[in-house]
Image (tube, rainbow, N blue to C red; front, top):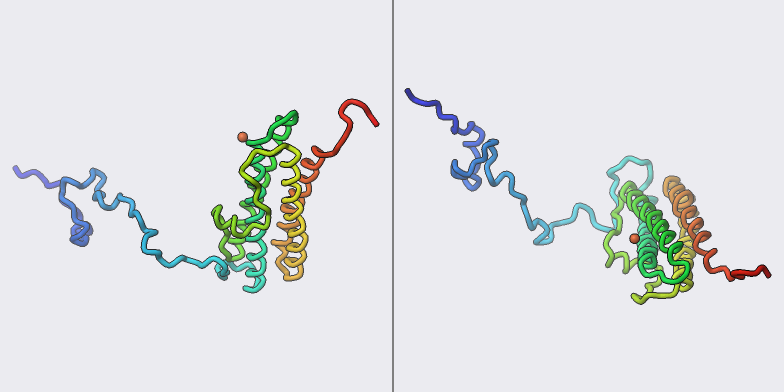
Length: 223
Ligand SMILES: [Fe+2]
């Protein structure tokens, strides 16, 4: 008696292009051919056209803002993003390299501020995408764009670390006041709110916590 052929492929498989055809022995038990589960690698080669160029805005999301308003906000926010990534990383550098009697306090404080700046980085970048822009992301591009001075690779004294951080916060805050005003005038209330409620408030709070470490107070005797 003839046995039923259970290896026979369905009609759809038989119609597949010749290049994708595999010997029956290569077929998996779930019915997928080997080629259908292989990753398609090296798709970045040959410089395919990007989905969207950096420095442009699209109207994909209906959020009620004109192109010019979006473009102005995206330009401001990319500057703010580059500076915030730089300040975030300055905190991590100092978290690792801090030394002295206040090591433990500053080590923990720097890492707390790093985490808070990381939240700002994500919020600013996502606001840029919501506005139809392209957020800057990579270190080399951040280095090109940031206005915060580059610190040396060397390990520095704690008061020097604090001074560098305060200078960076000052730059962030001056820009924040300017950007918030411009976003308000253009009608981009969401960006204005982000800059005031999150970027400005967080940076002001961090300035307070960091500044008090470099006030020259008597250590053991009141003046
Ligand atoms: Fe750590």
